[in-house]
Length: 501
Image (cartoon, rainbow, N blue to C red; front, side, top):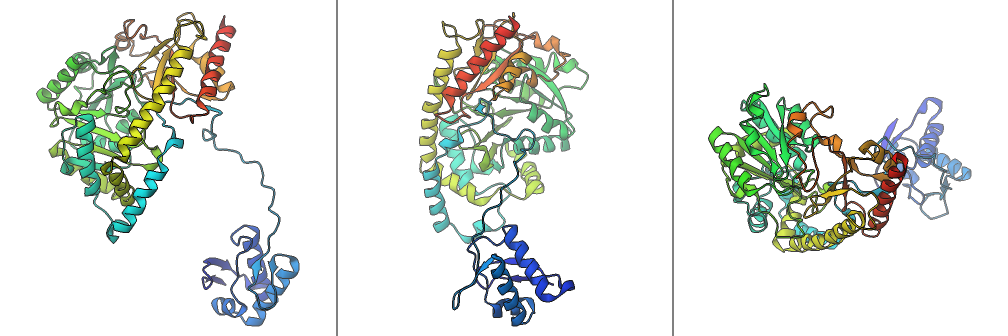
């Protein structure tokens, strides 16, 4: 006999099995609801008259069940007072076994993660209250798959002012992050007849998989000290048996993972290739706002807005849990991408879009970025002092790459050891989470040694095709935890050196 009650603000489903009698069935159902926590200690129960009416039982049956459970200690009842769930001792839970890969590391030095403890909670709360009290009720209904006009307008101004992006609200599409942005673009490209996409080597392996799942061939685009090699688009890649790429994905402000900015000449070469071939350049501006030693490098999109897709998100600036990203598109791509977004998930949540729009419009977002830039620069400086050349360097011969910007540095290991697997193993033993460089090559078996040879010794002092190293993020750990994490990593390097020495 299923039933629900909500007369006292509770909404609880009870399955009353009357096979052994109605009273016994109600007792079992209530007892199980208390034991499994669906009825919390102190929760008020409906009167016997109300519950009897809800469940179609006699009042006497409900009264008898209440009396029995009170006698057993599950309920408390006093004359003239509401019957409530008793405050039972909490059961001792079995030790939790975290799922593989989900346990929080003791020391978090993973790249690509911001310090979520620095989330601007007060500013976000103020903006949320303003949005909820001033926005129309339609924010709680289905929304435009292209994104709320308020956020697209705010982003058009912000990106033009801070990143040099040339776009308007009508050419921006809001997504649930860069991961979805790449998936939508890959789908649109595949449907338009594109068969191959060039992506930086080394580069972000998760985005490679997104492109492959759309049915596209991924061609490795070599990287050197000037960033992605634009000349390879019509040279090396054209002869790899998959045809010339119809699009190329680059990280021009801060190449992932080497940190090299794309040389101005290559920026123009990429745009010239796109115009001559009809191809598309996809710009991943994943941490372009964080530059420490000189002014930020402007977006590549500003050179050729008709051939470049600009991709950004709030994941590094605010937090990946918000699931907010954006694309500034050439006008002819807006319609197909909006249709792909609609087919994927209808639209991105409206409330978060409006809150972010308010943050940007009131310049709270700018203030948060500036504070983060100062905070991360202090951490970067501490990393350089501790791991760079000098008397405290735990492993002589380490080379730090890309320290002028971003939220991570690539550290290449000396040729005489220890090797990357040995360092990673020692870090794992000490509870340190980071990434190895080998994970980011297109082919870990070194099948593309001909391309990797372009990563020669003049890339900031030593990255080459056989380079081994680790990516160290200096943003994921909280402010107070970061120094200890850095010391733990220095200790791991020293221990790995002693083992291989």
